[in-house]
Length: 172
View 1: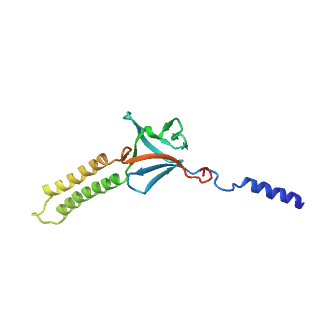
View 2: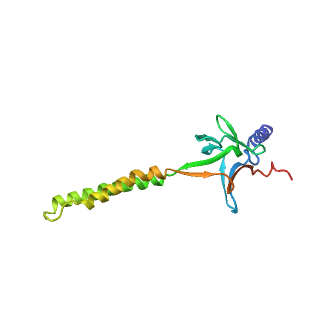
View 3: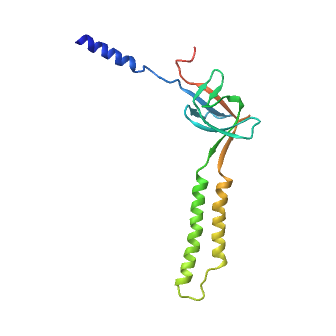
C-alpha cells in the first residue's frame, strides 16, 4: 500500500508546475527619456490603428512573439512596428456630463418651484436661470463628444516593443 501512495504523490507532483507555466510576455510602451514603462500583458483588449489606415481595430492579445516582434490577435497577427496608435475610452466625460445635466435640471426645477411657492410677485424665473440650465445641459452633451478617447501615438517620443521577461528563456 505505501508503494501506491508514493506513486500517487509522484503523479500529483508531476501535475504541479514547477516555476512559471506561462512565459512572461508583455507589450511594453516606452517613452523617450523616461525609465517608467507601461506593460500590456496577454489577455488585454486593445483598440489600435495601423500605419496608413484610418480605421480603428479592436482585439484581445492572444499571444506575443517577441523574437519576431509580432502581436497575435484572434483573427490576425500584426508586426509591432505596423501599429501607429492605441486608443482608450475615457469614463470621466460621461460621468461629469451626467452631473452637469442634473445640475442644470435641478437649477431650473428649484427656480420654478421657488417662483411658484414663495408668494412674492417680485421673484420669478429669469433669463439667468435659463442660461445656467442651457449652458450646463449643452456642456453635458458636448463634453463626452469632445473628450471621448485618449489616444497614444507611437513615433519618435514613444515606442512599442514585444518582450519576453521570463529569465529562463533569456540566454547568457
